[in-house]
Length: 362
Image 1 (spheres, rainbow, N blue to C red):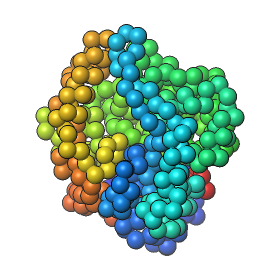
Image 2: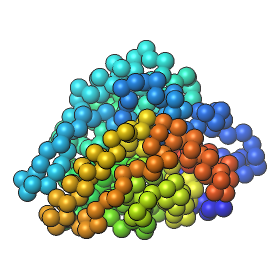
Image 3: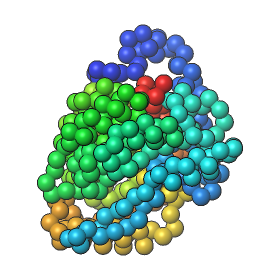
C-alpha cells in the first residue's frame, strides 16, 4: 500500500528482506506475540509501573529528566532539565520490578517479561564540553541521546530559535563518540540544519523520537520532507506523537489526523521510517483544559517574541479517543480499519523501533 524507501543502511536489506518477502520467519525479536509488539518512542516512567502492562508496551524510550519551567531573559518560557540523579533513580525504580526493566540492547525487547525501558536524555546539556561523560552515562544505562531541546546547547541548534544553526564542532565530535559507544542519535527538537547535519554525519541509523510532518502542519517543531527522507536514508525511524496541535489545525482532532501523519511519513520515507510516540501521560490526562491554557499562554509569549510558527494558537492538546491507557490498541485497530496491511501495522506499532534499536545497540 505504501512504498519502502531505499536506505543506505537498512536493517532488513539483502538476505533479510529476501526472507521476509518469501514469507520466512522474522528475526527472533519480530516473532513475539502481538501484545509484545507495541513500542512507545518517547514517554516518561509512570508513577504506577503497572501502567506499562496495562498499556501493553513491550518497550519504550524513556525520558529520564526532571523538567522545571523557567523564563529566558527576553521573557519567553523554557525548560530546565536535570538528569544525573534521575538516571540512577530510574534504575533503582526498575530494579526488581516485574513491570519493566532497564534495556541495554535492542535484542532485550521481548527477551524477558515486562517493558524494555531504553533511557534517554532530551538534551546534551549534561555532557557539557567533556565528551568522556558520554561513556560515563552510557555506563549508567543511557542508550538514546537527543542533541537539544528548546534552546541551543553546546552540541546543536534547537527548533525554537529565530536564527537556526546546526551541529557545532563539539556536536560533531560528540556524534562520532555516540556512534562509537552505540548510543542512538535522536534529532527530535533539533533545527532543520541540526537534523540534516546528524543524518549526513552519523555512521548509524538516527531517530526522530517524537514529532510530526511539516507538510501537514507548517510549524518549526514539525519535520519537513527533506528531513524525513534524510532520516529514512540512514535506516532510521520517526515517531508520530500525541500532541494534537502539531498533528492538525482542524478545530477537532481525531484519530484520522494521526493516520494522515503516518501515511505522509510512510509516503515520503517508506513504511520502515514511521512509528508511534507518545510525549503524553501513558494513562491519559484529566486536566486537558489546564494543559491547553498552559500551551496557549506559551504560544502567546512565543508569538509576542517574534518566534516563527506561533501565529495560530492551539485549540486542542490531544485526540480525545487516544487520551487513555489503551491508545496503542486503538491506533492498531484504526490502522486495520484504514486498510493498512498487517505487515505494515506490525512495523508501525513497534517493529520499526525494535529494528533500529537492534541495529544500533545490538
